[in-house]
Length: 286
Ligand code: PLP
Image (cartoon, rainbow, N blue to C red; front, side, top):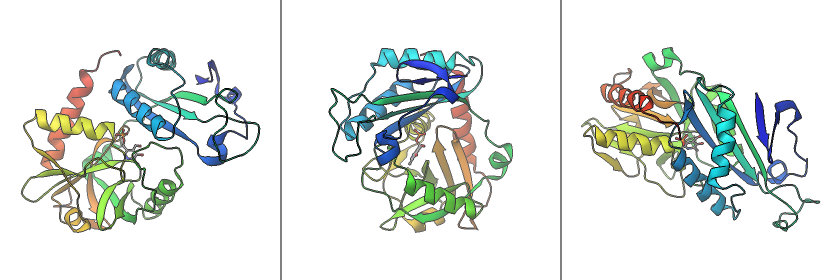
């Protein structure tokens, strides 16, 4: 399948960028991941809005209009129109003639724009049946986690630490509060059936799936409270879910090796997961 790079569609092997690209040298760029089911993207407008917010956060002008983005993404999706896919798109501050932290002159250095469609693997039925394991990890990231930056080394270290412990995800702890996963947001259900997720702010990326799950929960008559959650509250939760574009809503049944609730995916998770699956049936071509 072809990928998109700076105005052209070409085979992946031919898609090359300069070693002076600021994405390579500084991690100076932002990205998006958009799930696509049967050719229909999830919450495309919300993803475009978040891309704009991320670009604003790093003082870069979006090099493509929404119509141009839609055309690029449509062409990538059409390589595999019936399959489930994820769209990856990335914008960096381009490749100036020399390495220099200061921004290059935008008149002479154009951003590098890359986009690719990849098959979206279905979620592991065993994880859905038994629930995932997560571990807690110190959040050593910066204080602009609301920007979907490609500078991901702290997330890489946390996710690898989780993997080394046989866990699906690392939940990140800052000042005694669990902010989000290294590549996901999370919700807890308290012992008295309250649904809680941490609020938007500089210490977490506001997931499109998180927003969607809040909307679906409210439509199902549930109240979602956005507030900080402590480590102890997570450990004592009746249910814990991860949300992300590729995981959808995933039940967590072990935290640092100890069971969450009764150690099985919970009833409220089952309800929200069905809402999410039904929502996917209602998607329309963008
Ligand atoms: N938080 C972080 C740090 C992420 O990297 C991601 C996604 O990769 C999310 C949250 C979830 O965001 P979304 O639901 O938009 O995939």
